[in-house]
Amino acid sequence: MKSTPSTRPQESGESAGRTDLGRRIAARRTDLGLSREELGQRCGADANYIAYLEERAASPAISTLVRMADVLGVTVDDLTGASAGRVRGRSTARLDTALVPLDEDECRTLLGTYGVGRIAVFTPEGPAVLPVNYLIAGADIAFRTAAEALAARAAGTEVAFEIDNIDDVTAGGWSVLAVGELEAVTDPAEIRHLTATARSQPWAGGTRTHWMKLTPVRLTGRRVTHES
Image (cartoon, rainbow, N blue to C red; front, side, top):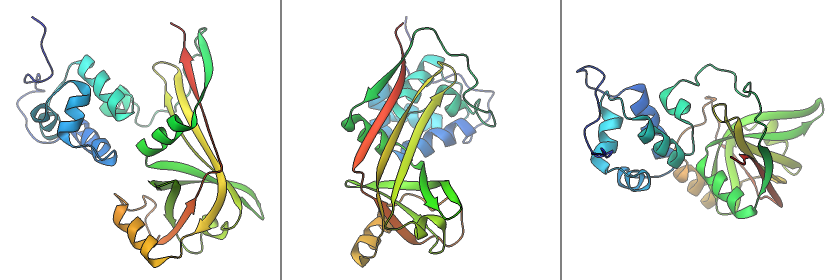
């Protein structure tokens, strides 16, 4: 008889308490704004099972991890921690690979599922690419930085913003690129809204309360696919 993800998973010993797997599932689910019920519905489980995975030591079946990783927009290795500390992109390319353009709607959807990207700006010393924690606010891509930072000084110039996903297991992935003018957010009501909407503080730490936004005038993306 085929088991379902709503059954009690095999435990790793008898220890209880949140594991790294549980923390990653909970963090990614929260970042996407999903409840346990919503995540369970999308990956064929129930809310109690999701709670169990997040809060207790468990070894879910690989099929469950594959479905959950797909819903969360990450890889199984990302969830289990197998990719931690590993340089990505060293897998051998497959012979059946094709590079497929993404339409604008799919690009916007992918932008909304991630929280860290890279902003490319021009400086007197040359181009610079900076990682930032970002959020989507309507049509805008917004992020916080320090008032004296390179990104803040790039206000009024054309910049590029990029996110991507790399899957070494399948030798595949995708990328999304947004181009437009970078602006400083100065309206107090807009600043309050962005601050209230942000789910976390910038990972870089320090005083980063200067909001910037980019309204894309060009939004493109590509995905590596395999015919078989």
